[in-house]
Length: 219
Image 1 (cartoon, helix red, strand yellow):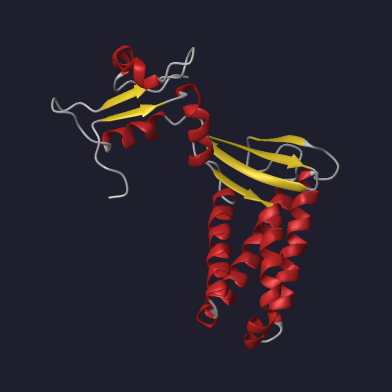
Image 2: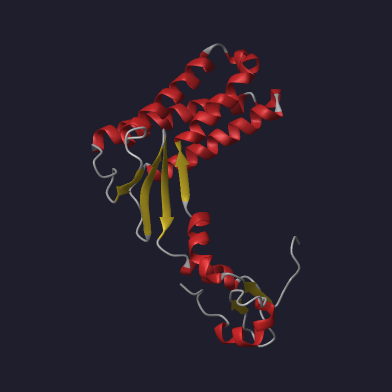
């Protein structure tokens, strides 16, 4: 096992636990990822040419749709957070939004398929194919209506747009994970939350912290 079995888990700086958990348990899809994928695929043109010259068109199409997504979100014009409570972000026409998202799915799927068909030619091409597939999987999260218990928004910075979906809180996920951590002799899992204060490590406060055992993390 990667980590030894323990009877206690200590979360230092626990006041940040919810914010960090939301980041890790959420989904993120950005135009910067698309641009990076296009740049990284291009040097493997000689390998991709085995399947004909279509790869250039696939990369160009993906880059074009990335530009369309940025433009639709106002990147380069407006910076900040774009509210997204319905099927499309606020201020964006639904039909245009769906068209861009659908076009991105088609382009990513075609590129991923090409890369994975040529994965035996190069480990790097295989990694690129897997990367494109992961991006497509995340994009599909944003192509369907948002499930209850989540929140969506778009971060627009400079010339990039980043789609974000995150749970409203991590309480339920933490309960599931805590249940799998391990058990004490009395059948209780000991979870300690705390933060360093006045130079004392949280481990020095273990006795006092036991009062928070098995409770939800502090807000």
